[in-house]
Structure formats: C-alpha cells, structure tokens
Amino acid sequence: MRRRSIGSPRFSLLAFQDIITAITGIILLITLLMALSAADIQVATPSESTEQLLEEIQQQIDATEAKISELRLAADATSHDPLAMQSPDQLRERLSGLAQAIAREQERRDELQVQLDRTADRKEQVDREELRRSDELARLQQLKTEIDEDRRRLAAMRESNRVIYNLQQEVRGTAWLAELTADSVLIARFDAQSAPRRFPSLTAFYAWVESLPIRDHYLMLLIKPQAAEVYEDVLKRLDRRGINYGYDIIPKNQSAIDATSGAGGRRVN
Image 1 (cartoon, rainbow, N blue to C red):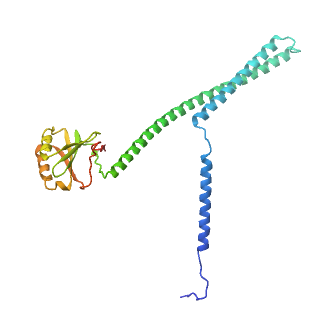
Image 2 (cartoon, rainbow, N blue to C red):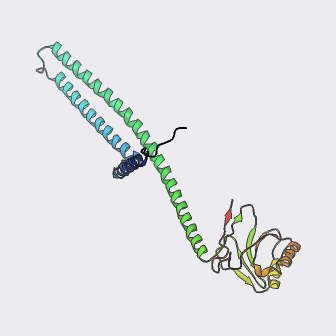
Image 3 (cartoon, rainbow, N blue to C red):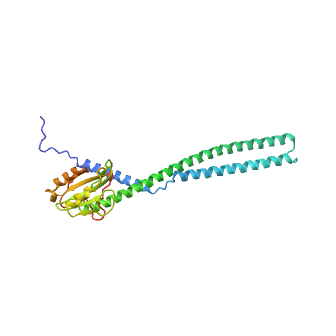
C-alpha cells in the first residue's frame, strides 16, 4: 500500500469552490437583469396588433382603388383626345398598357380584399378568445376573493381557538352542530350565518329533538370533557328518536360554534 509522506502537499478544493460560487452568482445576476429588462417591454395584445393590420390593409385597398380610378381617367382622356397620340397604333398601345395596368391593380385589390377578410375573421376569433379569457380572469378573481375571505375567517377562528366542522355533500336535509357540556347544549345550523341557540338543560334539548322530523334533520354532536357522564344518555336518546347523527370529542377550551355567526362550516365534496 502506498503511503503519503509527512512532508507532501495536501490537495484542496477551496479554490474550485470559490470559482463555482462566483460563476453561480454571475449567472443569477444576469438572470435577474434579464427579468427586469423583460418586465419593461410593452407587448401589444393580439387584438391591438390585428386591429393595426386591418387598418394597414384597408389603407392599401384605398390606395389601390385610387390608382385604378386614376388609370381609368387616363384611359378615358387618351381615348377621347385625338391629339394625345400621333398614330392609331400608338393610341391602341397606350390604351392597351392602361388596360393592363388597371387589370393588375384590380387583381391586387382583390388579393388585398381576401387578406382583409381573413384578417377580419382572425380578429373575430381573437376577440372571442379574449372574451373567454376575461371571463376566466373574472372567475379566477372571484375564486381569489373567496380564498382570501376563507383565509381571513380561518385566521379569526385560530385567534379565537375555534375548530371548524364542514358538512359532507351527501348529508341531506337540515344539519345541526351541537356542543354538549354537563348541563347545557349549544346548537347552530349549518349553511346559515346566524347566532346559535342555547338550551339551559338536557331536558330542554330533548324536547327540541323530539320536535324534529326524523328524516329531514342531521345532528353532529360535539362532546366536551365536562359531558363525560351524560353523553351516553344523550346518544341513547338520539337512537330512540331515530335521528341521524354523528359525534366527536373536542377539548374543553375549544369551540366550534361562534357566538354571532353560528356553525361557520359549509358543505364539501
């Protein structure tokens, strides 16, 4: 096995690392400068560029029409002016040249008209596309507003130490959220921004449950630790009544029902 002598120089990669770091920094700086310069460039929209092209084509058509009229006037003046040419052959040659020039200009005008029609069709397509995109942008803006509102509500709920329960889409009828403590029940309706209702006793809550139609209501029961001794009796009463329900446990210091807006949840897929 070959051994390195004590006095031999050591190989270091520090200089290579410095070079790589410097090159990376230069590349990042160039990329940033290119991005800043690209942001200052004003690019015409497809609709604006198409509109400009239509105007240019129409100007060319107008110029061609004017030239055709000028050539026709020259042909008429030549055919009615006996002094314009020295001989009949020269007159026929002059008129033939003017007729050919008029034909060429008419052909150019027709080509420009075809181009104008195609450009107009293209502009109509661009306008429809921009309208569709504007509708999509409006929808995206609406979604952004809804997301911002949800974030605001979520931040407010976090500050109030509140938990949110959403309702599954397949749950039919009127749904209720209920917080159960040892001696009272607080209820609020899903899909409704309204103040909750408090039953001061389980007896009052049972009377309300008995008044509900069995098939038209769903109850989500949130059990707090204070209700550890009574929740089984509550579940048995709901079973006897035949109400569809679900239940969960939440901490003592949390709440799912706001004092002014109620349940706060919504239906989700």
